[in-house]
Length: 234
Length: 218
Image 1: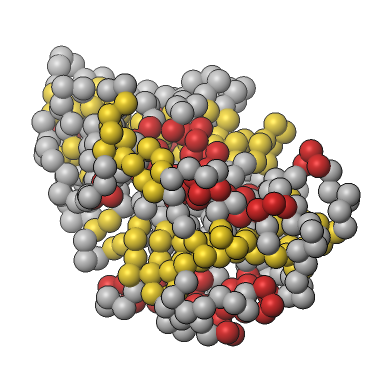
Image 2 (image 1 turned 120 degrees about the horizontal axis):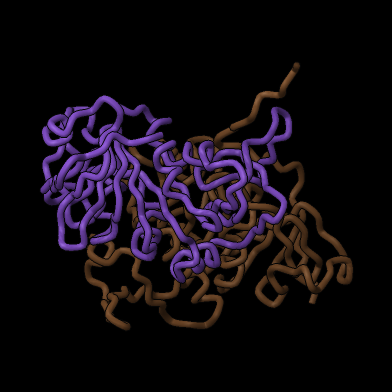
């Protein structure tokens, strides 16, 4: 059950034009930055990307947008990217904005083998247009379909060679639910260890969901909003 | 009239001991600064954290530890981290007691619009649609009028909706208003130095005024 590949280039080698990808991360936190760099280098095009955000102009999925590799984005919030906004308003880029919880739960449904979920999010709004509404106990819910993605690309803190993953802090975010949802799941990790080195009680994503794993070098981990308290020098 | 800090300070009085609270971006974030000392309150950040602590000290920022506004933050003793699906699971299951968020428009039947201005701004709804669709207790923190001087408390929202029949209370720089289940903004309190007439002039939707309206105590 050794899932280890040599690096990002090998991990994404069979991603083809027109495929649907899930990319973990919230803003720039917990982003699979090594695989994104490899996708930019490979130049694969017409991608549909499912990711909570669209990166910033010069980092994250923003790098793929700049090269016009993305045909469609499925996201909940895309506010921090000027090039994204330009492509969207000019009609070059197709965008489907969906509620954040709906995004996460459509991933979860795929990973749990459920075809659809019911959520109240979006009832009475343009998100509900064309979707089936069901009433349960007097309240309306939208039926939202499980995602289907050719590849899910996630970033974890630690992983073992069998693909078991552990995330760190809020870099967990969408990564565990996306890891469960890809037809093929690629995990990039900061530390790659041998089986037995991770406590089975502490595994967030069991290796059965992960097909390829590699250790990324020199993570940049850019901070989007650096907010601090001043030190008291008294 | 209240400034942003004043609005946050007034909203903080709505928080009760033992509450789990989700604070949106903008004025709602400031509410954290005014939670009374000794009150047991846990802040939820929808990117996957319960027990949001203050900003880190300079030099201790951790890129893996952010809030839903993408700001670097810290945890507290007793904090818990989870994935995005669980985060919205606890919101949908009404485990979060109070949601405070900003708005561009609120209508007299409790509809809210805060995610899109057609042709101009497309940032997305983030977690707002999930929050307003599920939470029983929603307070909106916003300015009473927009930059063009037009009321944001309307009979009907003109912008694309985030949710329907969901806002229970609004705190603005001018006052505190309940949104009644049968429709209408019921004026509860005036901000310091603000007259009922000023609030009337700034409210386009149905305003309900019963008896003397007290000035708020901060």
